[in-house]
Amino acid sequence: MYASNPFVIYSRKSKFTGKGESIENQIEMCKQYIRLHFSENDAYHALIYEDEGFSGGTLERPEFKKMMVDAKKKNFRAIVVYRLDRISRNIGDFAKLIEQLNGMKIEFISIKEQFDTSSPMGRAMMYISSVFSQLERETIAERIRDNMHELSKTGRWLGGITPTGYTSESMSTVTIDGKTRKACKLKIIPEEIELIKMIFEKFIQTGSLTKTETFLLQGRYQTKNGKEFTRFTIRSILTNPVYMIADEAAYQYLTQKQVDLFSEKSDFDGVHGIMAYNRTLQHPGKTTEIRPMDQWIVSVGKHEGIIEGNAWVKVQMVLEQNKSKAYRRPRSNVALLSGLLICGNCKEYMRPKLTSRLNAKGEPIYNYMCSMKERSRSHICNMKNCNGNILDSDVINQIKMLSEDGSDLFRQIERSKRVLAGNKDSYNEQLGKLEAEIKENEDKIKGLVSALAKASGTSAESYIVRQIDELHDKGEELKRSYAEWKNLTASHALADIEFDLLAQMLVTFKGTVDDMTVEQKRAAIRTFVKEIIWDGKDAHMVLFGSDYEYEFPESPVGIERLTAQTDEKENFEDAAEGSGVEPLGENSK
Image (cartoon, rainbow, N blue to C red; front, side, top):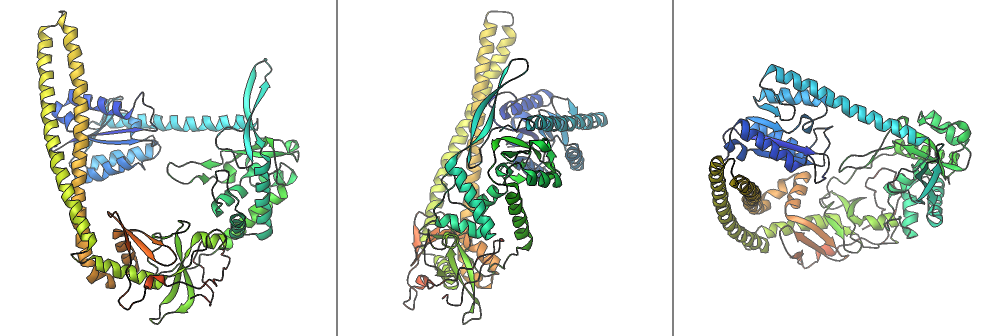
């Protein structure tokens, strides 16, 4: 059992290195501190939250957020960290955290700084230390920016993934003192750079990312990674200043945008390209963000530019105009299968497309269309559309049939529960064995500690110490195994509850689904259905927890309702640059 007022250990490391103040080392030092200042029992039952790969500059860390949620539910005694900046390097975040913990009467202990919020002096010292941590962080950031300023003067390529059309080439320079310095610059790849020129030309001609994308898909052009072009990758190319020739137009544009320019006007020679440093902002697990241009550090590069300044600037203006003029056409507010329905031909998602007609019930008629078919204008994929109203209705009806007690899905749930119960018994048996081994190991250590006191100063002392160390390592390994098995047991207990909930939802689905809102129907379908595959004639529904595809049977009136298709007379209207639902032509059925 856990202690009624458990200690909490929190550890964080920006990235895994396998050495130094690793997550494991931080946890062990915190346990030793609790063991020394409180008790062995407190250390053993301490709750552990660990974030690896997250910066201390933000509190948006999964295990930290979970710890704070748990702190409101459980009566934690104290949160222990190895070092203050493991929690946060931001004084504002830290101050709010301490105030929050004080309100919950939870102490905060930092081992390295020996700070403890139980005393006013400890709180004051912690605030002071946090100020210095933030100052250090800001100083490092400023130093990095200074380095970028110096590097920008050289026009070098700093490494990383090279832009399409270029490769990285090593170059050497000799300094005044005779030393040879190596650096990198971009070198043109002829076949790739021709594709880049074509992309710029096509966009200038059409003024549309969608039409440029369609042109590239129809021509079967691919990115340097062998993937199909998307509007996102095209836009990324069009907005990259690396392709812009450093000429008079480029100088005027960059100056107007107030970039941090580290080249003289005379350097804009009409030949070389532009290097922009500090242009992107990386977020772990998120899409790369482009910084505002007044934060860029820009210089004339050592590489050759390919797009004249006037043309590049024109492209940026068109993109901005499209962005401001674009509007999102209303998405279908009745379609249920977006994100679930997959084209059986190209494996792309199928999206709902509204028509201008109504069915007998007065509902807008919509079809599902393969997104690759739409983007390539049927050149890469020509999958037949399916009638969305009929397909959505059939999915609901088939799930209603699955809610019968004798259905295959119910039998699958019962089989899974039986397997789970057997696993749970074996897990509990393993936990019992590990508990016994841990106790036996601790008893041996206690015995050796007693023997060590008697053997002090004798030849047996080092032998006993070595045995204690070995048993300690064994004990830590046993505790890790115990924690893993405990987690497995807990997850299986949760899964047991989930199976019961799933069965209960299936039972109630038939009687409640017709009264649900569209959003509730979508959520309910996603509870049971993993994906639906459309092959142009039939739909195949793959259920969660199932090892088979559920094929829709014929309807009671003898019609294979899921074979309803639209004619191949779709009116492919070009979308505005926003991603909305496009209405089909009057001839669509």
